[in-house]
Length: 349
Ligand SMILES: [Zn+2]
Image (spheres, rainbow, N blue to C red):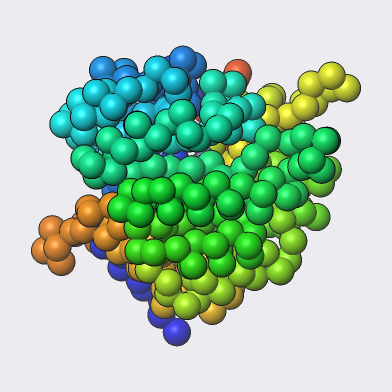
């Protein structure tokens, strides 16, 4: 049994770093959680829709913690043009994120259908940018669409996009279902998939009535969770970690009223690498930790690090310790996933 594991330059390929005071609290937690690269989501207020905004946001993050490499994304919206894609690529922006309208935090400007974006995708394919898909369709009583089947119902969109743009690199974000795992496996080498830490732990029973485990997409059934675990156990190179770590102030997670629900999002950044090690060990996939948290994603995104260039993060197996309950203070208090629970791995600096 391994008691020390050293991972070269861990990379989180889906993270929300927010803005303002919350950003100053949570951005340093990328590094605290063991990660040297953050693939940053663009759903701010207002969303990041231009190269100039993305570069300004990157500078803000670098001012908070310059030790992390930030890969920036744009928010897919009707404002985005093929010309802007070329400009973004030249400026080092890596991807474009698509949100279905109204499905998650700050997604009111999200898409309703993809055809209108084909010229943008054409440009992305040409300059080699990545399309990141929040793979859910909006709930709709007329078509019996709801939070449990929203992801399977999205998968035909993934297939038609892949068929129309076979060279466009596409990532289906935060997959939660067996159907999604199978759909991505069936695609060619240009389609990959991120899996969060929390979806390796939770099922429906864990979030029904427990707002701190509520996120979008919601955790599904035990068999779905098993499919996520199995694809990691297999060491499939197109499935890698994107934490979807999404901090919300404590009061917006814990206080719901008859007219106001709680915010969707689970915060894992400060404990991420130990948490992933702990989870992978629990389902016999600890030997895949390096692939899942570093090499597979880096290879897909063409951000490989050489053995000499890699910064090694060392995890030690330790006596169980309790996860800190809260970070920040006052209105900006955030609470991490598994707060008060125990972990058996720790980063050693
Ligand atoms: Zn997200």
